[in-house]
Length: 246
Ligand code: NAP
Image (tube, rainbow, N blue to C red):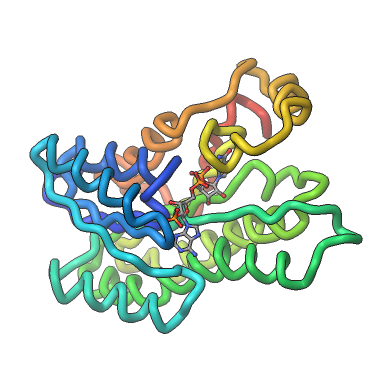
C-alpha cells in the first residue's frame, strides 16, 4: 500500500502514466498528475481519482525544460511538504531511419525522455535526501536494452535512462532513496497505436507470452517498486515485456 504517500507522475495524462497514477491512488497515495499538452485528459485522470475518494492534482510542465522543472518541483514541495515517489514516465517517439533522421528529431527525443528525467531528479532528489527516504522510478524500454531499427534516438534515450538510473541509485542510496527503472516491452497505448499492422504482427511474434502488454501491467510493477516492501531494491531494471528481452 502507498497510504499517505505524495507521488509525482510525469506524463500521467495518458497511457502508462495514467495507469500508474490510478494505481497509486488506489493504493492510497495523493497523486500529482503532470502533463504537457493534454490538459483535458489530465483533468479526467484527476476526476477519476477523486471519484475513488483519493486526492489528486494536475500540473502542466514540459519536462524537457530545466527551469520549468525547478519551479514544478519547488511548488510541489511548497504545497505538500515532501515528495515520496517520483515516476519519470513522460516520453515521446520520433521514429526514422538513422540516415534520414533530423537533428531536431534526435534532440527532441533525448531532451524529453532522458533530460526530462534528469531535470526532475535534479530537483526532487534534494528533498528526498533531506527526508532520508524516497522512491524514484524511471521508464526505460526494452528498446534501450535490445535496440530497434528506426529508433536510434529513442533507444539512445532509453539506454541513457538505464545509466542515469544506476548512477543516481549509487549516489542516493546512502540516504535511503532508491532509484529503479522499468523496461516495458510492447504496451497498448497511443504511442504504439500508430504503428503499422505489419510492425505490430512482427512484434507480437517476438513476445514469448504471445500478446501485447497493458498499461496496468506496468503500473503494477511501479506500485511494487514504490512500496515499502521494495526498500532493498535499487539500481535495477525490471522488465515488463512478456519475456521479450530475456
Ligand atoms: P503515450 O500514451 O504517448 O503518453 C505519453 C505521455 O507523456 C503523455 O501523458 C504526454 O503528455 C506525456 N509527455 C510527452 N512529452 C512530455 C513532456 N515534454 N513533458 C511532460 N509530459 C510529456 O505513451 P506511453 O506509451 O504511455 O509511454 C509512457 C512511457 O513509457 C514513455 O516513457 C515511453 O517511452 C515508455 N514506454 C512505452 C512503451 C509502449 O509500448 N507503449 C514501451 C516501452 C516504454 P501530454 O499528452 O499531456 O502531452
